[in-house]
Length: 111
Image (cartoon, rainbow, N blue to C red; front, top):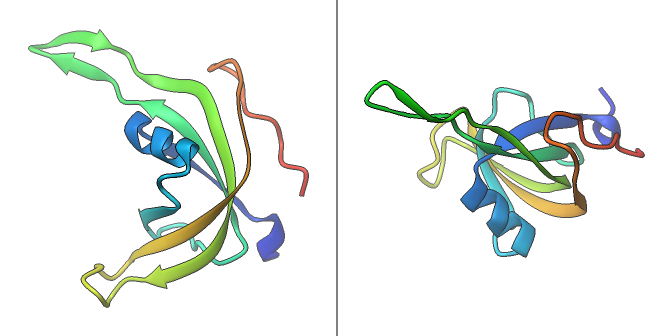
């Protein structure tokens, strides 16, 4: 597998997405169920979770249309320093960011 062309699409909740967008959050903690590796890219798409209270739908949730494309520059695997096995912390470098219609896909990466 070519690390330079591997891209993982992930959902990111609004408060964490905004911190990434503002440059305050330069990392991601994830279960490493996708084989993340240094050099891989992430396509982070802002996602609002559905909300239901007392059986009534408050919001259906879904993608907002905002996205960030980033590159993994460093990884720490779980099993040490209090991080559970199977999880990882990834240091990220932003490559591009933007917004599109929520029902359409973000622009393709120009790898």
